[in-house]
Length: 445
Ligand code: 5AD
Ligand code: SF4
Image (cartoon, rainbow, N blue to C red):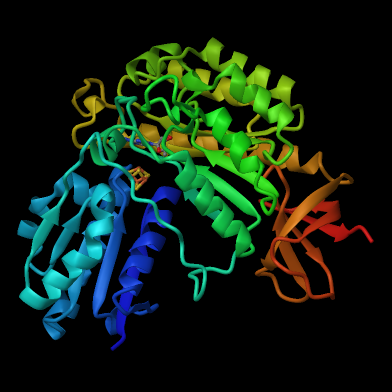
């Protein structure tokens, strides 16, 4: 008998990948995904806790499911992800209509937990976080897939050891644990055999991949990149996220040497002020960061660099913020994700003095985003007239015969073509026009 499963995912790519894994595991128990929570026999809310707003969204969604549970007492509702890890049993106490609270390291137990919830109405919290946890080998099921995309995420490690003072992740995902390289390669090969052409390797801090393994018998991140690049079916490799302090010369060498490695680097800076960087426990200075940016550009001149920035960290003065604004001019990021600082449970900065007023944070964020928007526009306008390689992703959302794909730098390109194209195909496109966050072009015949 088939049952309906509804999954809602918040947060990062790691969470998206975890949701796929949960869908597949529950699929083995005859749960098929539905797009309507009203029809579901099981609801999974995979939550994010990175900022106050993300966690708030999860709480309000969960609160709304109370009426569904009242209408259908057999409905199983599971909370997974970082809010689950952070709040644990507190969530069950606070919301009596929830059945399961499952942390990121425990998602492999979900089928067993859901079965128990269904059969015995057992309400359970599974939030153990072990530093010696071995991530199970797991091959994604490709038939009846969630998405028929030529791009997939492959998690290479979990957790984080850095303890930036604003960040909840070390508390919700635990210490760094690397997957076995052979498991990663098996997964990549399996994906390639099923038509996947682009892989994004995921970790909170990919540069420290393998460092949790004994020295001497260790596959480092550059080693892993070379192994993945040997997989013939894969034409593009990306990765995220890198901590600037760990961006090594060996990794820079890879950028110049591995053709499949895309010239795009996401290098979160967080602030342009040394004083704030120190309070954030980032372990690099503005000058050291700028040196890494220069070295990246030297290794790979066409590289697109993107970043994350927090405004209004406790103690951030006008002067500190000006230094962040100035950094935008010095680096000229392709794009930047920027956020107002928010206190997170257990993160050290929650107890720091000199909190910045909400209006000040909002004003700084608006100023920063407006300037970055201009820079991003200037950068893509300069590309008009160039010919680029585009990997086809599918029909563009715009009407007509428009197709959509991405350049190696991860820029979106829309172009017309009256032929049928297939996802994963590589084409040459001449860029003709810069739009707001994308480019329009014409196929080179
Ligand atoms: N407040 C605001 N932004 C945060 N980030 C992480 N923690 C916080 C916080 N407490 C941002 C950082 C990080 C991105 C994923 O989210 O910029 O790189
Ligand atoms: Fe959110 Fe971070 Fe957890 Fe991802 S790891 S879900 S971004 S809190």
